Length: 551
Image: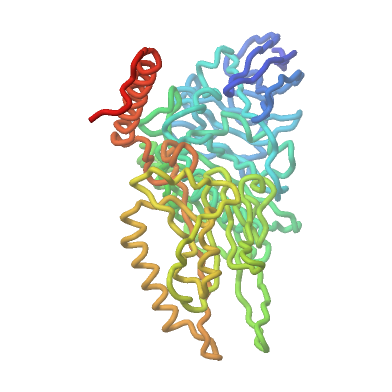
């Protein structure tokens, strides 16, 4: 039996327009004999710079194994024992070898993790991997594809086009997260579509991502083995749903589980997370036992149980301490300590700094007005709205200034809000909370503004701001009887791609979709045509004896 099938991308060159790649030349060769389900799975996908208009010339060889079992990459399973999902994988043996494909994910001649892939639903069942520490950053890496050994026409797996320009707000969601990888090559290896599923955008980018950060901190704090090395085993999977993104199944639920030895307690620890693949759903922390019971229901394995990890992993651990950092702050003669949770570079703002992967998008602004700093804003240049504004409340400085022109810096524009009868410019740092006239004027910057539904802005939200102001005036007085309170107000972007104001600024509902807008345009066009006809008529009409006046 021949050991390798090699896929070589010889060259690529073309001009990219409207995110289209042109010109692809691929040569591949290989010989395969004997077992149908063994052999090598080849993968490569070209690098595409998002804002490059010129072509690339690339050469690359990549190899990954499709195998009959996981014996070649059993190191990624705790004690070399694969999960038991009786209807799919039992005692390391795939039950339906035509549908489910074990993959030993190989990149740059090194095995990185293991995946069980469902060729019918075109999504992975799970990816299994080891966590031994992670480097920061996210590589500039395009998504890779992995042609099946039986056919290289990609009919058995997802491809990049399945995810592009979809109107369901679905992301390519990693099973093995990029942020868990131990080096740059390991990070790049996670960008294969056999390690990804369609994930609701807000679920992937917010709650699931926060869960990944939380688990990472738990592992770093608790998973130190007897040799003093950081080591944990994880399995992350997806349960197929009833809906599809093109030909790719959209999972109904996502899950992850970890198990490791803690040398300090001399005990094994294990836990899991389970979350529905829906927007703004926070995956709850559950015991390993509860997770396995959920999987048994999802895959109808009863009375045969699901086992994600071997018996040494405890099934009923509920609480595990996360690593926290004590920060000492000085205020006058008093020392106080507060606990601030350490976060990874997956966050928007980490310990006062925007992580490098997000620095182009999120901009910290110290709002300066008349040579004095008034408040602070973190601004999202992609959605053109602030993430939050933070300010200190020291009492109300009187009435709203008149007039109060809106200032730009420049991101959102004043024109973006004009001609809309649905949304207002909604303050984050409200004018009514400023303590003097100049501070009030400083709030009228569009980097402190989001589109707010008019009835919400001037109704319940304004009432809430007034109530909070009164509460702070009554309750937030320091030892010198001075009012002092710290406030942060923010906005969560809509995950619906059509929710834009003038196709630029993120909002609740697009004003341009209202029928009144279209009716106004029709009337304007008709009036323009009428005026044009009138001008042509008077320009062509010859009057030999015009009347001096009409009585």
